[in-house]
Image 1 (cartoon, rainbow, N blue to C red):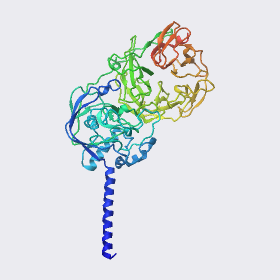
Image 2: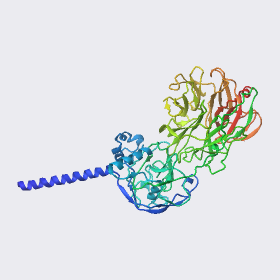
Image 3: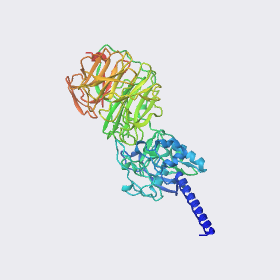
Image 4: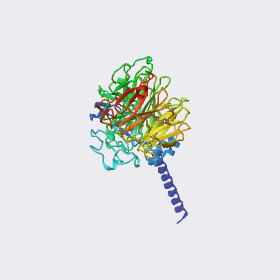
Amino acid sequence: MNNVTKMGKSLETAVLLTVAAFFLATASKAQEMPRMVTIPPGSFMMGSDRGGFDADESPVHEVTISRVFRMSETEITNIQYEQFRPEHKALRGKGGFSSGDDEAVIFVSYDDALAYCAWLSEKTGRRYRLPSEAEWEYACRAKTTTLYYTGANLPEDMLKNQKTERELVPVSLESVYGQPNQFGLYGMHGNVEEWCLDWYGEYPDKPLKDPGGPSKGLYKVTRGGSHNTPVEFLRCASRSAAMPGDKHNQIGFRVVEADYVPKTYNIIEKKPLYSLKVKRGKARWANPSDEPVWRDPIPFVIHPIDNTPFYGHNHQPAITWCGNGDLLAIWFSTEAESGREMVVLGSRFREGAEKWDPASLFFKVPDRNMTGSSLLTLTDGTLIHVNGVGDSGDWKRLAMVVRSSHDNGKTWSDPILAEAEHAVRHQVIAGPIIYSDGTLIQCCDAGPGGDDGTSFHLSEDNGATWEDTGSKIPGIHAGIVELKDGRLMAFGRGNSIDGKMPVSYSNDKGYTWTSRASGFPPIGSGQRLVLKRLFEGPIMLATFTKSGMTLFLSYDEGETWTDGKLLTDGSGKTIAGGAWTGDFTMDANHAEPKGYFACTQTPDGIIHLISSRLHYRFNLPWLLQ
């Protein structure tokens, strides 16, 4: 081969290498930037008329998308998001999900998604944002009118373990999978939920043009459903929502490029019954009576008088008193304890009333499980509400959310994520206490099993932030009191010691514990105890014996206890106990056999003990009869 030929070959090789390098660099660059798909204007019927759990998809209404916009072909991937936030790479593979470059990014909040859009806009000189809810459904449907853009069902290669799981099953979150819709979009059904621009709210019953959702709200819409979620949540019309700061492994996002922002609209806010006509001012509490007081039990779980969601299983109550003389009780209502339909309902027992208000909606993050609630009245009259909030199903994975009220529970602050990780140790138990130095102590179940024990959480700023002590005692659903020497004492359900209910003690405000067998029989399914220090000084334990609900008193800080007193007036009657209790007979030798207790004592000395459905009222002299 002569020199000219050699030079020609070398030049050809250099050119090919240069071209290859260019295309490799281009391909890599394309991978780092979202590929956009043009979405044409048009009109469609938004929502569904399924009703029931999906009533928020109604009314079906016409929506016109009047202008062209562009949407990312897939959800934003790890490699795309990490051009903006390289530190996010540390979260890859957490929980077994999304470790690859081209898998959907997860563990991003609504605010994180907005920040990415702002960064991408500055980087490219184009205008990026999140899709409106209407744009999302329009783009998902892609001119179809069926449940999914694939028809009445999703093909097998688009399913990613579509069922509720206590332990999430790791699946691939590759952003390109299955068949794209007619607009060329992938992953609109499942993979991960996607943040939308809109606040969550009711649909207006009228045609809309380029809508951007309500002008205000508490939760941001998410769409599309996710892995480890029943397939009905993946429908085109299915709606979910989350707190803007929430982040977990089932929410990601995609972006829209458009030169306009959808218009928001105002909606009429419906006030729940418990917040209406709430008396102002302070109650004039009567002095505690020296005479025994007993009143027949009455139901506090009363069917709503409006369209408030109300299901067959009403359980896990909490109760507190308000400075105006009212009582406030809350509980969850659901069809299944792992269900996403679960709502927290509330009712008010107004000063001087003879019965509770009908139930009304107290707290609900749309399409999220809401297991576990507590209420507490602080010394200044502030009410604190703590609740669990799930991700996309089972109540094992909960975040802890806190709200407060300064007007006797009429209005509440926006919810804050006090312990934001969706994890075990966050199933809230009724009966938090105020420690002598002002620290709030909140018990939570340490896991979903009956023998998983109780965890402890502390707040030194009246509930704004919380610390998990990392400790655990035997027994779930624990009740807790502070002893006069500063120690904590707790009783729990399950984890029997020598065939007895466990009792635990802590010398350091819940960071470490010692446990032993108590003198009380263990309690089981459908039962939750109360441990409470009464204003008069003794500690009261409300628990269960073979005869039913039984009350014990201790005047020596739990060393010894009085003989038990059945929670009954002795008259023979059959009463509906609700939840897991059902109908039972109350007579001289039998009291309610099951129930989840919660308790408060008002300044007039009356002890208000509620079970899963019933409200009992009595005082210390009655206990001592």
